[in-house]
Length: 213
Image (tube, rainbow, N blue to C red; front, side):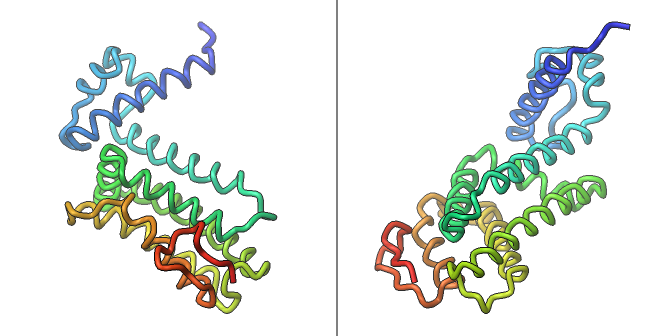
């Protein structure tokens, strides 16, 4: 039996995922055939199924990839720094992703698929639970350092931050006049007033213009 090169195998899998993402962004999960994914990836159906036995497996891999990237962000945070500032930077990344038509379209497709497919729903829920746990730890540590309101329950506060993230993508789906990157100032103001009610915020409410409490 020919020995599989792990690096080449992973690179080929990523090539398929990138091709699938392009197709799903254009036509949605159910509007995309495996033949179209193969054409985009430049391979035969038999070769594709060697890496992913079903289209559902490709969708699951996309969810898992997003989970890993989110986990990597929280893992690199230095918990000796200003954690409120780190949260704002994380939310800035969310706004940048939401402003990407391809990413936001894919995120909404995944959310819709989670309502139809139990396996995808479980993966999405696990991803959300992991992010919520990371947010709770960040907020707990920020409170212990006096960087946010110590009277807040970090778990519940983390849930509301998660709800804001969901709301950003949901608003894109129904409001063509909503432009995520234009909402950075308002989002920072909302988070500051929620998490640091004693802080004085300038009229522009920008992070650099926020006076730390």
